[in-house]
Length: 478
Image 1 (cartoon, one colour):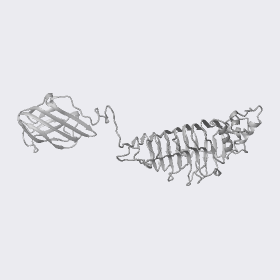
Image 2 (cartoon, rainbow, N blue to C red; image 1 turned 120 degrees about the vertical axis):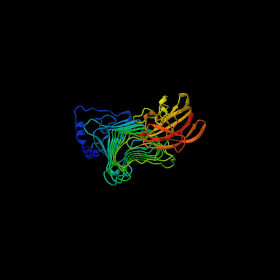
Image 3 (cartoon, rainbow, N blue to C red; image 1 turned 45 degrees about the vertical axis):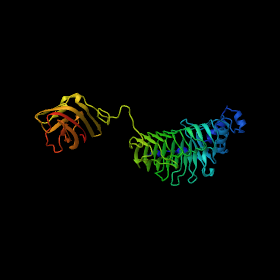
Image 4 (cartoon, rainbow, N blue to C red; image 1 turned 180 degrees about the vertical axis):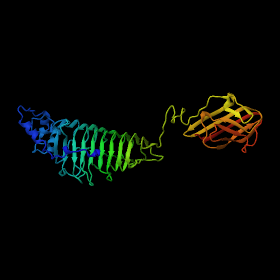
């Protein structure tokens, strides 16, 4: 069974019916508590209909009693208390609940006995949200609620916020409708006003929507963490997390994206993805420039792509995006820097940095019976560098001495214990007994030495006396 197919029987019952037996028991119980009307209720002109429940409990205002419209009860609870408690059961909203206040928690029961489930009816209207904040709000928490949006074509929304600060949306289940006309949004941030920021959407299960999380206009420091987001078979235009061109500083981490046209789609910049899991999406993520964006700075670290379409992101000389992990290791228009350099696997030196080996007299020799004496004072340069399988050796040796029976080649040991993979020949500078010329330096496959010849035809003997050699050769190593 696919993860998105988790049974939802507790969410499918008709609104209100599951609550009636329990309400009856509460009403008829001997010694049932009686919670008097609070000052906040009096100030808000809210009259409880069932004082067996404390202030803020939606049943106190008639939710689930079979007579009062549930959205009215919820609206009264939100007006009369900064802590709204939703007992386990099913509720039906025939209209949007406008919360429009700060410093409020809306909390569903999470006791293992069931879910607090809310179904938004079609009569609520096109674009309606189960809960909506039409104006600026802060210190908002919504947790442990289930919202069902089962009205194709109505473009309805689970939770909608105008401009939100310092808020948490946790452990919510929001489900759309499973069909081609999918047009719902689970959570929408309008980002109007100045900006929406310091908001966490965490441990939520969002499934069967056009957009699971829609960040519009200016949203910053919004964190989407450890959520399960499932689309409907890659329907075109469906997106797990959608980020507008005015957004920046959004963190998307530890989430699962499966079955979307695009798991993440962003026109914003400075978006950071860390450790997300992508499976069976048309495109796992797509980073593009939004309107007015001259460049974008986005990054992906440790995202896992199991199957589906590869991510799409800029690869040019302007945008500055980074992708590290299973998908790719890619840096565009940026720098990677380590104070101690980089080392390749099984190498004891830093990548691309020059190394001078310790002096040893046998590193320098003549061919046949010719001797070549090189002392430490004669060496101005004798160094090498390795990048991948490419080795470069440079040498400047002056005032050395050739003696014995002269011959055609001087030999310099290839440092580091490396050997060439191919024959390479390059021009090099030489001085033999006062005569300067252009000779040849070459390496041969599997031989650990560089051979220096006085002339390009390799047929001329060196002269006894002083010898200067200088040059550089690059070759592939084994």
